[in-house]
Image 1 (tube, helix red, strand yellow):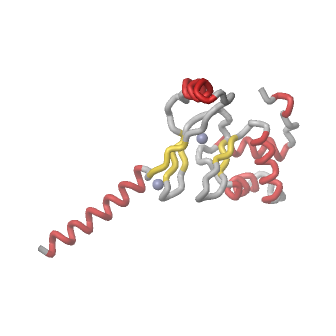
Image 2 (cartoon, rainbow, N blue to C red; image 1 turned 180 degrees about the vertical axis):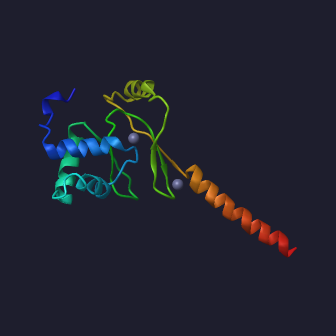
Image 3 (cartoon, helix red, strand yellow; image 1 turned 135 degrees about the horizontal axis):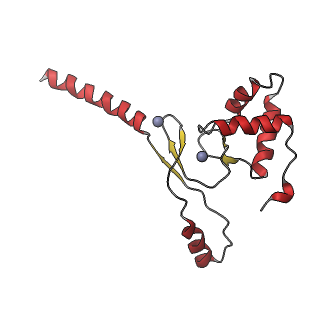
Length: 147
Ligand SMILES: [Zn+2]
Ligand SMILES: [Zn+2]
């Protein structure tokens, strides 16, 4: 679809892409920089930023933006849904099918030509929730002792 704008994969770009595709943590540019630096010790953060933006504009990677935190990068260019934890800021891929019918529904309703949609579910991940829950429980025990 976007083949006309495919960039030449320079060594730097290829390594950034490889490193990003190794992880499913949706790292920030700083984190990508730390990963890439192990293989390209002389690379600068600015170069990593520039290449991430370029890879993203050609559809080889995706960016995940949020008002409350840094931009994050996703090595998986296929559309998929995400779960974000508002406590630890972890983003994981959601193992459910992208609902293709939604694009068509919006297009039919509005006349807007829809290519795709993005969905991110926000809340509290299981480990943050359990941590919170355990803290709550110990408070409760202390209270019971007082009685
Ligand atoms: Zn969490
Ligand atoms: Zn993802």
